[in-house]
Image 1 (cartoon, one colour):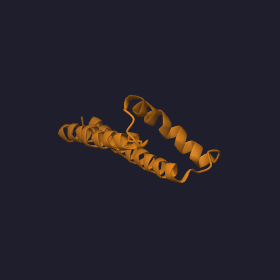
Image 2 (spheres, rainbow, N blue to C red):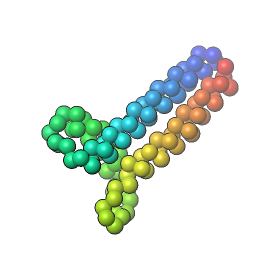
Image 3 (tube, rainbow, N blue to C red):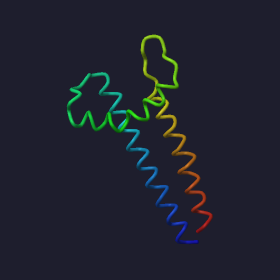
Length: 99
């Protein structure tokens, strides 16, 4: 059980890091939307390609607010925080009981 516990700790840490990196990518995407960068820039295209599938799914289900305010990044932040607290915390808890 010691090996499984260590595996779960490692998995929880990797998931936590991936979620933090994705949150920062969404922050960068939101900041880029304010300055209207060159859409052909490879960095901008990379960030858009990473975030657009998730943001599009949320935008499709979210009602449009007067003034065109995009709330989808906020929903993504809340979902990431939930996953960090629930999923990562649960994996750490399970792993600590196994060790």
